[in-house]
Length: 412
Image (cartoon, rainbow, N blue to C red):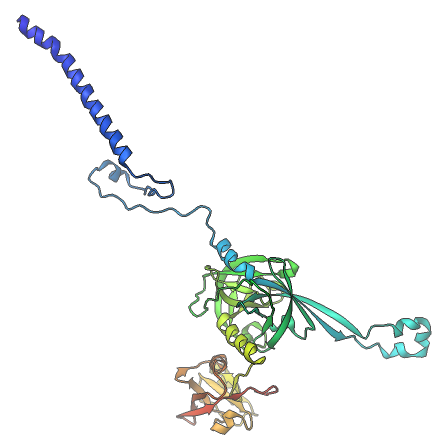
């Protein structure tokens, strides 16, 4: 009995000692494991993904993949502006115009006795000044802007974001697309990155940079609201299918770039509907590049020309034409593009197109509007052969028209 009591008296302390030794060993192993882990900064450590309560209590649950969190300081608009903003310039243009002639009554001797020399000192000319925007497209100093910004300018001054003021030379301007090119000579010129408008979709981000109302380096942002807006839809006489955006565009933004979220130029800001809010328009960059290349190379633009006046057909238009007493033909189609007039001695006339023909396809592409025909022809060069499919007296025929050069004065 005494031996059993003695054994139980030593049994409990030995148990405590064993537990202490085991605890010490576990702590030592933890320290070793920690010191062998590779060092990592906070930014390189994997982020903890959220897990459900059930997964938290189930030790056999599959580990959730780490999801990196975005940088709280990242802003894609600021990044896009930083990338392109230095190559966006202010363009100051001045032109000399004749003053309005004095009313004849002021030349009467009766009035001249009151005004005397004031009439003779009235200036015969006055200076008009305007401001717009532009962007540098290459290291040679070529700048794309709007034609109306430099129209008739005697002097052009280009002001860079870094403060440099350079004399600009207008290489050429095309009023039909409102595109112009100004050239400057300088070293270390910043250059924009040119993107594409071909695959744009309504709802994508759009960023405008320019100098509205004299406020330099102004940035506005919005979305692409619509694509392919014709000049007729927005009330301007231009050969352009515009990009519509709700990014704020004000006087002075004209000629500045419209950017995508990567900071690439997708358009040239131009048209503003007076009194409207949230409606801005830009020339697609592909159109601006095509026109700019001709202006840089030749100082002018030559464009394809057929020599026809067109009307988009629908049921209502068909009815109006057929009910008119002045129409020398009857329309049987309710869709397509009616040739309302063929200009004498034009490419269309020489090829055999006739008034009353209804265009259904151009180069194999179906056309349902006059704007579409114009868009296809605008993309061609002088001398190109354009296949025009028309319906004439219930027959379908295809006529090859060799595009001529658009005349300076043309009725169609």
